[in-house]
Image 1 (cartoon, rainbow, N blue to C red):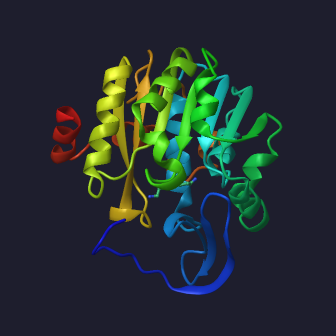
Image 2 (tube, rainbow, N blue to C red; image 1 turned 45 degrees about the vertical axis):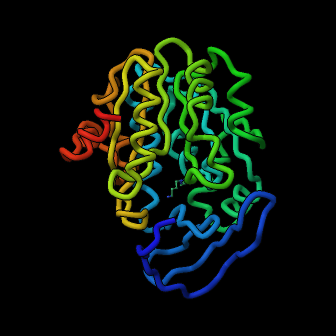
Length: 271
Ligand code: SPD
């Protein structure tokens, strides 16, 4: 996907390697970064830095919402986002829709620190197409998180305007979405497209940038839309017992993530 650009990690062992109905799934033991999950040749996570992405994908929207009771996660079959949502007692119901049940099985078996997200009794698992799932939902969720792979293969449909229209319709008044927003360095066309779509559809739109050393460019974005609440400042206080479980998110990081380099500001404005 990124001709001329590569990241090298030394692999000690292949733990799992199989083609599912939808994609090639590989799990490796690396020398330094722990286990690494790769889908269709693209790194999805390593044990070394997965916390940055899962925490920010989850806590940015959940702390931006004043009272998130009903949450939907699309994608994220590894369970990491579910693990993070589980820290919020205020959440009553977590619907989860993933197209590839083989990813869930691999995570539960080999990545227990992520797969544990499925142990939460509030989680209802639906196996199927996220776009089809969302188009049937109206006024159902306070927060929707889309933890997708990249816009090729099974994730492609999740980067289209029709999908975002479905997300908007599925939100309750005052609802918030957070979607995997690619890299302001490596994927400017996709970032621009997502920003344009969310600006057109939502009352409030914002884009956060976070460090993820093993993603292309060492960073990734989170594209957010809101039907009411501000996004760039938390609406709820974090209690110390949750803060102590986290490694990346703090109320200060919440605000800082939306402060972007000038070129990215311009890209988002002009999209
Ligand atoms: N370029 C890779 C983007 C991967 C985003 N999804 C990762 C899944 C982690 N829960």
